[in-house]
Structures are given as C-alpha cells and as structure tokens.
Length: 576
Image (cartoon, rainbow, N blue to C red; front, side):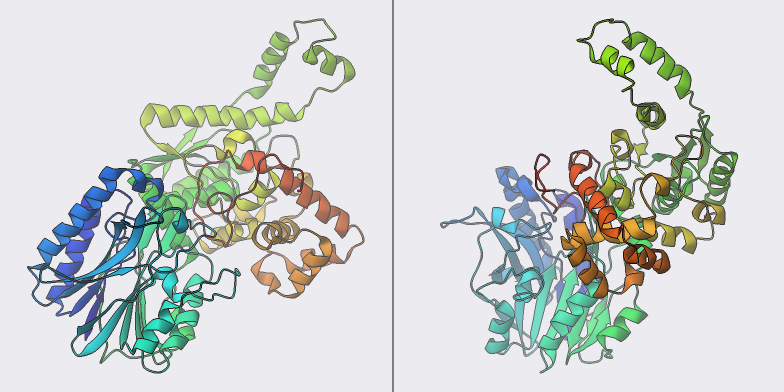
C-alpha cells in the first residue's frame, strides 16, 4: 500500500486556504499512485481554533468544506482520504466533537471521534469536545486500517500524571489492525520528535504500521514542526524534515527501508533556528504584514532577532533602527551597522536625548510645595528613583519604533529573551510590541544562535551584555552571570524547583551543558557559601515579576513551559 503523508500548514478559520491544501494533497497522492492520503488533526477548521468554535457559522462552514472534500474526492477514483474536522455533539456533554473521517469516491466510509482529550500545558480540548469511545476500522488493499487522533496514542505518557481510562492504541492492536493512521497537531518542544517516535515505535514491534501525520507552521505562540513519520517493527520507515512549505511525500509500505529512531533523527535534523524562523514568518504573514521593524542596539539579543527576521521575511523587508543615547558605546554602534550590512537589511539611526527630557519632566512635576504631594516628599527625602532616568531611554526608543510601525506599516518586534523575562529585567514597553521571536530562549541559547551564524559579528556575542543605560553598566552586574541565571530560571519555570536543596538534586540529574553556557562558572557559584541566598533572591524576583510578564507580547514557544500560553500563574498572589 502506498500512503501520502499530507503535512500541511493550516490556519484557524482560513477555510479556503485549508481546503486548498487538502485538494493539493489529494492531487499529489493521486498522481503518485497512492492508495491513501492522511491529513493533520482538525485539518478543515485549523488548529487551535479555540473559542471560534462557539460561533455557529464557524461550525457550519467547517461542515460545508467537508462536503466540498467529499465532492472533490470523486475525481480521484479509489483514493481514500483521511481528514480532520469539527462535529456537533447532539447528545449530552460538550457541544463539539474532534473528528476524523475516511472518504473515498464521494462516499463517507467511516468516522472516528477522538477519545483522549488533553487538558494540560497548551491544550484545553475538554473545554470544547466530548470524547468518543469507539474505534474506526476500514479495509484497503487487503489490510485492516484504523484511525486515531493525536493524544489517542499517548494513553500513559509517564510525564505528567495525566492518564486516561481508555487506551485506543491497545484497542486497535487487540482488533488486529495492520495499519494505524494518526492525525496530529503536535506543537514543537525541545526533544519532542524523539519522544514521539520513542513512545510510538515500540507499539509497532509485532508488525503494526503506524502512519503519523503532523501539521507544520506557526500559529500564534505555537510552532508545529511536522516531522511526520512511518514506523513498523520498532523502526522508522520515513521521517519528514520539510518545514517551510506544504509537503506530500508518498511512502510505499512494502518497499521503504527502515532505520532506528536514533538514526532517523540524526539523518533528518530540524534546527531550532528554522523553527524560530517559521514561527516568526507565519505569525507576521498570517497577521497581514510583509514588513518588520526592530530596535537594534549592537547587543546579542537584537542581533539574533534581526537575523531571524531577515531569514523569515527577506532582508529588504526588515528595518533595523539604531537609537544611541549618551551612554551608547561607539563599538555598539559599529557592531550594529556591520550586522545590518552583512544581513542586508535596512539601517536607520535616530539618536535619543533623554537627559533634556528628564529635566523638563521633573521641572513640570515639582510644582507642589506640599507634604501631601508624593513628588515633593520623594524629592525632600532623597527618595527619587534615578532608575527612572535610565529606563526612560528604553521608553523613548519604544516611542520611535512604534512611530515607524504606525507610519510605514511594519510589525514591531521585541528583542527580549526568557532569562530576562523571568527576572523582569526589561521595561514594560520592551516586550510589548507585536511579537517576540526569542521570548522562549534562555540567554545561552541566544548566544549559541549568534555564534553559529557567520553574519553576526564576533564582537556582538563576545562583549559583556549591557543595556547601556548608564556609564559602565553590564547586565550581569545588575543581575548575576547568565551562566547561573539560565539554570535557575529554567528549573523554576519548567520543573517547579523552588528551593536550593531540590535545585541541587535537579542539577545532579541533568546534563549541565544543556542548561548553561559556562559550566565552570555555574559549578563555582553552586559550591560557594552564598549560593542559597542568591538562589532565593532570584526565585523571589521571578515570582514578583509575573505582573510584568503578563503584559508581554506573544513569542514562539519551544520549551516545555513558556511564559504565555500553557502557564497559568496568578498575577496577585503571596506564595512566590
């Protein structure tokens, strides 16, 4: 049997585009002589459609497109099409059903209702869908073929203590199916591809063939990595690495060579940078923009965002604005100019004069000579915060950047990273643009991307990171070395490690090089007597900064737990 894995990029509510991908998949499958074409989960409405489902016209349009697919299928004699859609639940329970159907020659062969509905991390399917309880099996080319949807293959993940009563995979194995097709919309997380195949391929050791089709593309904060695969006899017959376009590979189940999971992953890598580019490209273009603008300081964060933007949008659609203040070093100006030249993007300079503005502001505010007035009290007691004088530089830059965005129609990009977001080391405006491409990257990951791209000048990642808001200021002097901060923030946010004893245990259980850019610096700190006080200071800081993070813009999620979708922490609370 020949199977087409229709790995397509869907968008919630873009029924015409989604239908176009489905028709293109049917055409490609037919031309290649495939017997079966399989599409991702909820292909027709797009994933995640969330509360759009509550609009009755939305469900109706989704069902009308399903009929269009059935009508189109008559043009491809004998081709079996497996496609996802939303059904209406006419019984008790939630109003909708997460469905897949098998179509051939204009006929609905059978339907399947997703049984296992995830309600953790970014998933909230129990909010919308009623779970099914039955299998769906049809015959094709003398083989018994079953249908499953995403979570149905993950009855016992052993990771989040979220186990289900049903086990669809076991149901199909007991029913003696030869082939199991799975429609998926599984977002990328570090190591997820290996995890998927390592979990699913053992179920195929006795001859069951699993066809796993995952969608590709960016959707809000999520990025779907595709990496569709076919497994049998505990090995991988096929693994896709196509990211930037819809793909329709056809696999001959009788002739495909096999590899181990490790071999398949090594031979078919999907770099992190490519996923970040995909997430940024799709968010920008699907939002209706073809131009982006960012503040470029000559620092590593803005350099990496500029590099990602040039790859996502093309350098002639990227506008990088240098906004030096009196504290900006000449080498930072030079580094930024050189970066822009080497990337090929547009370069602008708009110097800012914050000192004159601060003087005028304070003159206007100091007009009440009364102890009931907070301005008078603060000035009289020496309680004026000079940090405000530093931060106004960032706020002026935001004003200039937003003016460019509004005036010329370019989406403004944030340049903040996860480590600094964790510690609240940014002004409100810094993360309040339209999209933050590196929002879910720790500092050491940003550094790695900069080092790997020869277009990024070495001085940008070699010099001490600094916001340059005051003379001689460095970020690590204001916080602590990133080699220490990165593991603390990661452990607290992704593993809920809240005290130094558990932190030491966690460090002993991991590969340290995967969480810090300098193991020696980290180990030296952890061994010193003041480590516990440092740790509690940073953990407390992370907790207090939730109010700032809640106001930040979306950014591509690549870690197990990101700030934003999937992480639900009260803004006002006394625990942290």
